[in-house]
Image 1 (cartoon, rainbow, N blue to C red):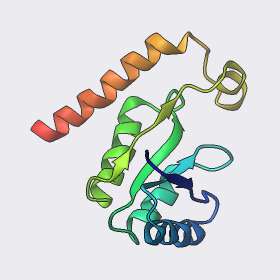
Image 2 (cartoon, helix red, strand yellow; image 1 turned 90 degrees about the vertical axis):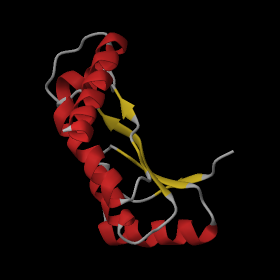
Image 3 (cartoon, one colour; image 1 turned 180 degrees about the vertical axis):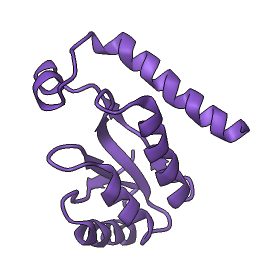
Image 4 (tube, rainbow, N blue to C red; image 1 turned 90 degrees about the horizontal axis):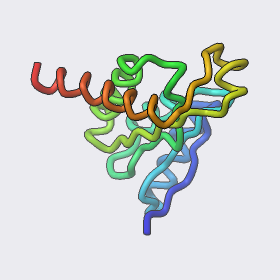
Length: 129
């Protein structure tokens, strides 16, 4: 069993403080969710003040970002954390895709499969130059 906790994503200093506490307390990972704020900056802040604890997106919205933009964010976080970053992706619901993000709704499963393949292809290209 893994034990995780969420860090604030609306205050980078608070994210660092909670991540430090979680690491000292023995948690396996800290997560951020994408809601009113993005999930990546708090994890980057946490990466700079921790050494062992995993850093994860509980969910990052895939479809509003291109696969290359997502690959960049994940690649950079993984490097900053010395390999401790885990990318959790989500499709979000139809209403949020259309109204909040201004993107058309399509069935998410086939699209997510292609999206993940594209992110992995970008990483492979960077790994092999």
